[in-house]
Length: 235
Ligand SMILES: [Zn+2]
Image (cartoon, rainbow, N blue to C red; front, side, top):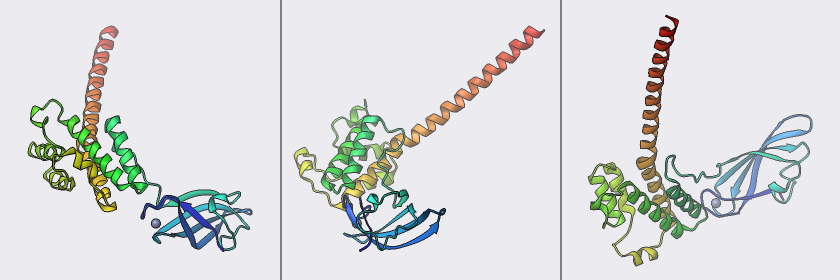
């Protein structure tokens, strides 16, 4: 028997998957503790998991049993692959960011239909948000809205082509029955992330910079005024 590990698998998305111990290397930390790098493989898909931590000197992964997280006195420092970051791209409005997070969590938990539905909802609200007030968009379905955005140069032609992954026929009842496989759900999440980056993050960063430049200009104008006033007073 050897030590085993449990956790979410980033490749097969099995939640709480068992990882079997394969090998390990050690480096003394001090007289009592050892830094160990342990290599595990997912019991479901064989994908690797590496854990680096500080362990009591006498502890040996080959002879230990049970779960790694229950070993007394250990401090795990790093795990690879790192846990997925499900936060939305910067500058995404809160409500849209919240839906994106749910889409990513659904994908990670293997709920591919839910991930597909949530990305669809996220894109639906984001496209309405961006085109708000433009009457030409009001009666368009999501896919047509994205195509119109591409025609209006609100999106790059590449993003417009990629939007072809969105399946719909204008009948909302059918949307609810569309089934997503792992790859389709992943592609929808990837597309949505790039979309949010394009419509919110890039403009947000540019605006941030423009504001900074404006503030800088105002500050230097104020400084010049203060200087001029000071000189006047000194005169
Ligand atoms: Zn796996």
